[in-house]
Amino acid sequence: MTDNNLSGRMANLNHKKLFQEPPIRSLSPSAIVNQIVVSSRRTSMQSTSGSNSSNSRTRHTTSNGHSTIQMEPGLQALFIAEGRAAEMIATARAKRNELLRQSNRKSQAEIEAFRQERETQYRKKLHEATQLEQFQANLNIERQHLLEQMEEHVKKQRKSLVNYIIHCVIDQIPVEPHPNTKRIIF
Image (tube, rainbow, N blue to C red; front, side):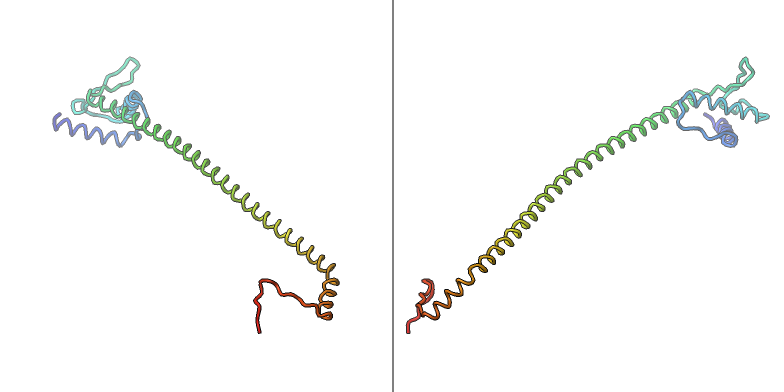
């Protein structure tokens, strides 16, 4: 490439920037070439004069009267490579999104399994605690029942016990000390 050709290409690129819509990145290589052909039709209609020697492309007229552009092989290869790169980027993004969805599903499954495990542990501890509370409640009921029985027994035996104590005091029946008590010798 020469510097003369380079300045012509730069002018052509600046001209394209002014009159062309931004390219769509997710097009196939053939669609990109077609888009360039369509955009070149617009620029060729808008441009009034231009020399073909400074442009990197030549104009051909087809049988229906429309002009098409034939690009240099290097530029065409560049567009094809750009299209392939766009396709590769699109497939990489799709794969990444699929991997993200898979990892999200796996993590949700792990979270659900962990939650189920914790819930069963909680229910087990709650059951044990309620059993302990029930056991304590049963002990309290039994204790209350035994105290009531003792009170009834004391009420029934009160008269005979009082009579026994009075009889011991009045009749002076020697009361023998309990064998575990100390004997005091005077």
